[in-house]
Image (tube, rainbow, N blue to C red):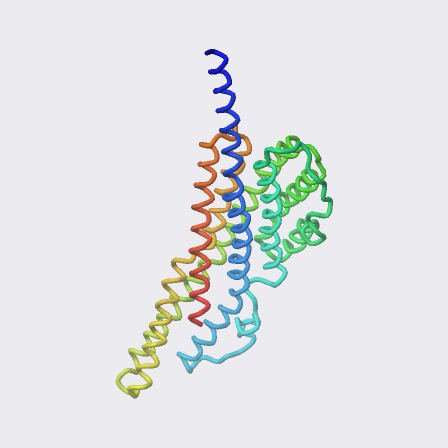
Length: 309
């Protein structure tokens, strides 16, 4: 009887581990997909900002005929007609920073979710030239971009960690290094991107949408008694679109998407340190689901904003 009980306990242990391992691929595959989506959403948001500021500038001039459209203002500064909120290099560097986090997160996911085999194939070229030299890119940007400097140190650390993790053939050693050294750097990079979006990018978008709406409403109220019916109808249609754009701008929070990635990464690190029980898998799967919802919501809002233009 005692022997049967011992065998049952051992069998239960094997079943628990197997069940946890069997349930792993779905949430982790979803995580990898959503990391790629996050890079896309944030990249589109950054890239559209220069075009968007130009749109607001031209619409303002349209509503107020007293305003000239010029390339350079009275102080000699470039107007949004030709100026850029973020340079192409600054946008590329920030999206590359997210891509770098994605490379790390994929490797961490593979290491944390693996139950079979103690060795992993080395891939010294996992990063490619652009990501491997990203810390140097941010150092150069820091000469003119005041928000670039905080990226330099954590990116330098993460590039080094990723190189070592990919070259480390023993899964447990690679996992220890990824968690102990890579996770803090990832957290710092993601928080810096969040700060960028919250302080420098998102307010421009929201204030711009609000400004455009206010201008259209003012123009309508001033001219409604003299405009023909067709002209009033066209203005009301523009006001409705601008109101939708403002609502979408309030809903679209790319910093929230990056925050979701950070929470999902924290859950992945916790799982990597855990005993891999079903309850541990359930916790990480829940974090991945919340993250996926944030990504989908932001992607939908961004598409809607684009369609309104």
